[in-house]
Image 1 (cartoon, rainbow, N blue to C red):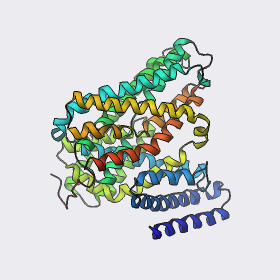
Image 2: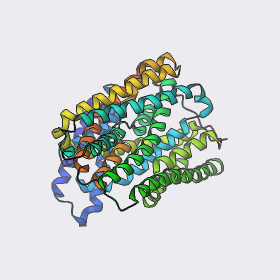
Image 3: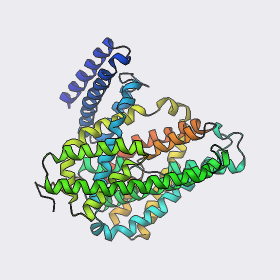
Image 4: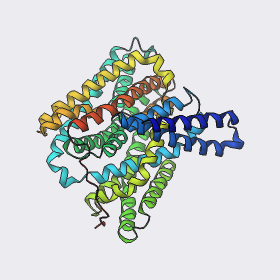
Length: 441
C-alpha cells in the first residue's frame, strides 16, 4: 500500500509540475494536452484503483474519485478541453462493456432465471419510475424549473424525470462483475435486468420525449412523431448493425485469431465513431453482437472475455476517470437536498421491486437477499438523457439536468460499493474460472 501511495504521489507531483509549464493549453499544444491528460488519468486512476482494492473497495470508485479530484471543478489538473477530447474513450469503453455483457448472457444457461429477471424488470423499473415521478410532481412548487408550468406540463415533466431516474447502469454492473470475477445467480440476474432496463428506458424516454415536445411546443408540427420514429429507428438500426458486427467478429475469431484483442478494440472504435455519425447506439450495437456471438454463432463468451481482458482494464480506468471528471460537483452543492431525496426514493423503488420481483419469479434465496443492493448504480444512458433534456427543452431542461446529474453523482459513487458488497456476500466473487487458451468453436 505504501508503494502505491508513493507512486500516486509521484504521478500527481509530475503532473502538477508539467501543468506549470502549460498553464493554458491553447490550440498549438492541444494534441500534447490530450496525450498528457490521457497518460496522467490512466496512471493516476490505475494507482488509485489499486489503493481502493487494497482497502477492499471497488477499483471503479477509485477511478471515479480520481476524475473528480483531478477534474476541472476541483484541482483543475485535467482541463475541460482534455476531458472533451477524451470522449472517444467513452464510446470504445461502452462498446467493450456491451460486448462483454452480451457474450456473458447465454440464454440456455440463464433460462432457469429468465422468469425472475423479467419479473424484477417489470416491477422494479415501474416502481422506481412512478415513485420518483410522484415526488417530482409533489415538489413542483419547490423545484424552480417547474414554476409557471400548467398542471399537465408538470405531470409530463415529472414523468420524464421519473423515466431518467429509473435507469440503471450496464457499464457499472459489467465493470464490477469483471473486477470481482463474479459468477452465479446474482451476477446473472443483475446482468439480465440492467440489459432489459437499458432498452426499456430508451423506448420509454422516446415516448415521453415526444409527449413533452407536444406539451412545450419545442418542435415543428409533427415533430413529436419524428422524434419517436427517430429513436425507434436508432434502436432497431443499432440492432441490425450489431448483426453485421457479430458476423465480422465471429469470422475473425474463427479464421484468424491472431491479435484478437486489438481487432476487437478496433471494431469497438469503429462502432463508436460510425455510430455517432449515423445516430446509432454503440451500446446496442455491441450488446447485440455479443448476444449473437454467444447464443447463435457459437463463439464462447469466455473466449471473448479472455481476448478483451488485456485492453479492457486500462480503458475502463480512463473511462470511469473521465466520467468522474465530468460529474458536476458544483451542481450537486446547489441541489443536494433534493438529489438525496430522489436517490432515496429511487433506491427504495428498485430495492422493493427486486425483492417482490425475485419472489414472484421464484428466484434463488441468495438472489432475493442480495439483488436489491445491486440495483443502485446509475450512469451512462441517464447522463445522455439529461443532456437531451437540457438541449431540447431550454425553458426548464438545464435546471432539470443539474438535478439529474446530482442524483447520478451520488448513485455513481455509492452504487459500485453496494454492488461489490452484494457480490462478495453472495459468495460469487472470484467464482469465474479463467479459460485457458480455448479455441472458439
